[in-house]
Length: 139
Image (cartoon, rainbow, N blue to C red; front, side, top):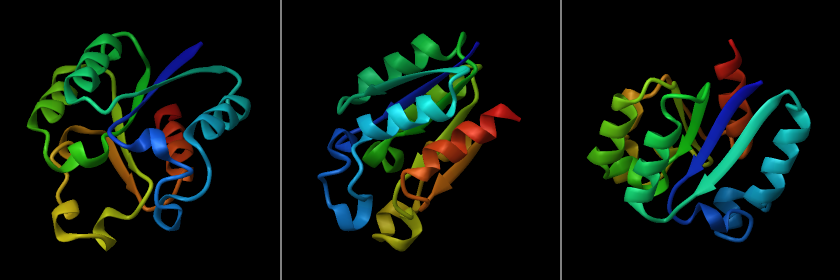
């Protein structure tokens, strides 16, 4: 069975209640359950942390034995050389996801330090970006 780890960074535990005009009304927990229904033959694990080092530890933990990682590093996307280095250090392909379109937001969000080490980047597709990332890992 294929194993995919979804990792969310800071403040993404508040999806569904945080700025619904930007991030929508669906909680991440509900959406993960929906993904598990859509992909019954894939083991989908979910992890969220507001702490940079914990995200790095999770990447190291799954980065050599999972089939794919879907990463929404949140604000760390734009600031974390350490998470970018962790992505580069692992063998498992990583797809970066952003619920909002980072290029339609503040200028500082237009730069992704992590994206260059990912297989691809999806931005602005709402929660559907997680499903699109999984689809990209299936090919």
